[in-house]
Image (cartoon, rainbow, N blue to C red):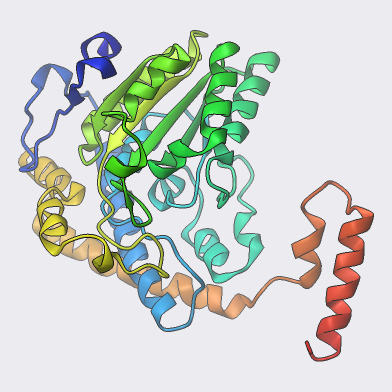
Length: 361
């Protein structure tokens, strides 16, 4: 069992695929079929292009504040690919790739960042909760989903994602403590991208790893190379099976790096050096996974160029549709907080409606 070999107190990091796309831990290489592997790669590729274009759209004044994902594709897709169809994914706000893999459309994701809340209205059967901006609260949401699954005997596991900075928030501890106390089917993935906005991980906590926080909850935990999609898949698959068996939650630390800014409102050159970024660019999860697929004879550079052209066109067409959609109806902002609007929300709606009708002055 991986939990024993990679106990967080042993300070070992799970890795299967190195930076050059070579297998370094053959016995742990997962048996994933070609179709699934290519789907994983194509989702990462789409996420990278969509992410790059979103940054451009925001700079052009065509999209609101956006949280880039570049560099964190493997952690997200590896985790999503290990989930079963009935499982729930509970994101924060930097999970574009995982959401795409789990069935959320790019149009819906773009709608959200465009400022249209209908982007949070996913298709029937897509078991993904909406983007969560309030840091840490998604862990409580996921614990609630896991609690419901246990009570209703649905055999569903909730997988939640949080950033390294989020582990300093109270709801991270509250949610995991609750899940641990009731042995709930929950897996929490920490995307340790080394920075909580401008605060480096080493300044945010004295814990040597974030995975070792699992010890306080009395649950298994491990640190994984978050740029190694195979390691992420293996770690998450075992963690999900453990949680599904009724033994309780698991904490995974995906050790990765945010290659871009925290959001489009951030300037990372103010708090980190170019040489650090350059070092992590050599560890790009896209590069190593592509090399792995090419070595297996599943992919080629020619196919990669064709895919890039196809996806770039698709991303552009998708955003055009979003721009043509406009923003949501004013009422939508108020009427979906509760099943029925409270008197306070009705009052706020009428007040703001009048404000707009008078010219917003």
